[in-house]
Image 1 (cartoon, one colour):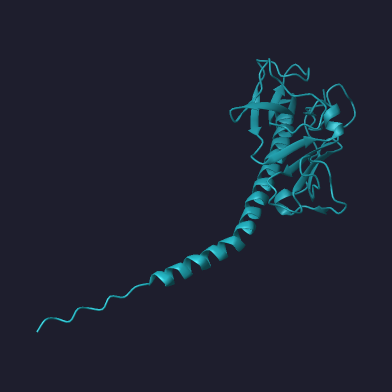
Image 2 (cartoon, rainbow, N blue to C red; image 1 turned 30 degrees about the vertical axis):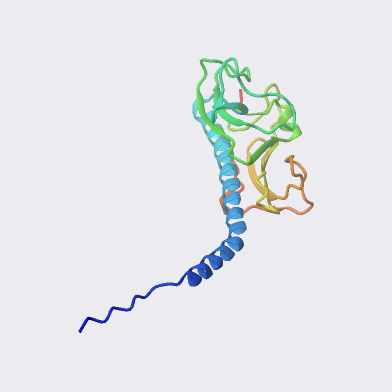
Length: 229
């Protein structure tokens, strides 16, 4: 007697096709939410990097007893460019930043010289726009911290107030797609969530705003050290 062949089990072609169709439906619903999560995380991360840069500039100004500047710069091949011939971008316009840098302004002239120390550089992330407000643009897109830990625009004696709009341009966020990083009275930093209503710019804000959550907190600094030179 020949042995009875074993019965093989598995999925039929129709069953496999049903599973594939179900996975495609689930993915279609989940993908937009996933893209929104990525865009929101990217927006928050780059905003926090800018806040960290401002805090670094302030603390180094106090520690080194020198002027320390955070300013808008250009970039090349994914690297921020800050040289004696290609310094801070001081043009007062609504053109998005390519990058930003923090450096020690040893001679207090408001300009990066080749022998001055660069503390940090950062390229603006993909699908994001950084845009100066009118006040910061008029100050040459520079925030200048003095040795007392307070910011005063170059050539000015009053405390500096300015803001940078950080906008998501991917289209994945319908609301709260903008963060406004603000510097008030020379030291107080804050971040608020707002909605940019422009598909190309980074300034059209919805009427309602709200304070940001703990990851982007308001920070106050009372500078210490020597006088503001």
